[in-house]
Image (cartoon, rainbow, N blue to C red; front, side, top):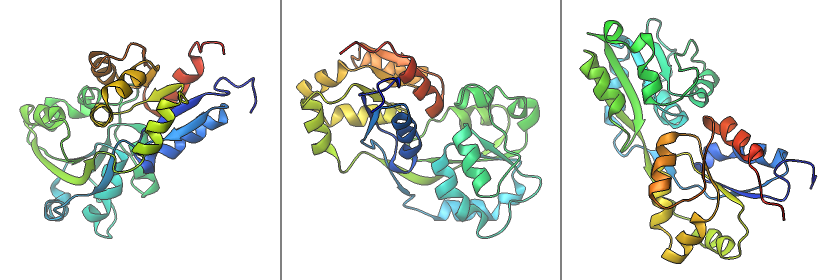
Length: 261
């Protein structure tokens, strides 16, 4: 351990889904910290594949295809393309840079994405999604179950013909609770990171009151104001709103005024 690094000696809980947790965990380790992986969302393919198959048949008629997350790319793109190349004239849209990277790795480029905030609100501010741009156009949204309706509803109100397709399922953690509880009881954690309001709900539902109180005493780092507000309502006293995505979380962790041990 290098004591000169900003996260030296700190154990940080990383709660992203397993497939997305490694990048943040490695970045924490590079700054001297120790990531504790506890994925709060398990991701699996959608139960019903028929809607995606139907969307694939209509892909060439779409003006825009919105991927709400890297998971939408992972679970939606193969079924959407079915071995073909991305069609010219159809613009891929991503909510954030992680989704842009996932699309690029799959060979899909020229992706429309917000440049600062990475959420539905920022996406809807882009001129390419204005009423003048989308009225009468077919827009396909690939998402997980139980996602927010803001994006689709707003585009529909702007005159777009919106099709929403659930291509993956999200559920609460099925494993890891025992190790998490033991570490929490032993005061091994220095901070918690959360990237989803849904994940926060699963976490608090799975803990006893005394365990939840212990968790609320930790600094909580979140990359979005909506998650921060929910965490404050849930009783977290030290909520740190960082910049977006993993880069924002890491910057917030490194800049935090950690108590001297």
